[in-house]
Length: 96
View (cartoon, helix red, strand yellow):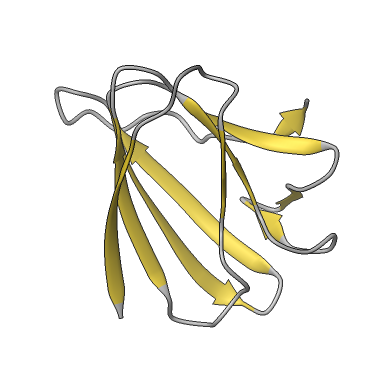
């Protein structure tokens, strides 16, 4: 199951929160003129092997095509492409 979302945000500090993990779920999306922050739902759910909730976030730049895939009950893998289709170096959640 794949879902596509278009993210519009007023500022790079706007937040999108992933749904509860379900193995195999894929969410693809495009972030427009402003970037955004991505959080996982739950205090023990990771994005790219780092807990991304109350204290950490994955910062997604503007004009980015992203893909998150749930690979376990506690892990999402996030990958991204820039506006010319080049792979963006791994986005690792860090402190807010």
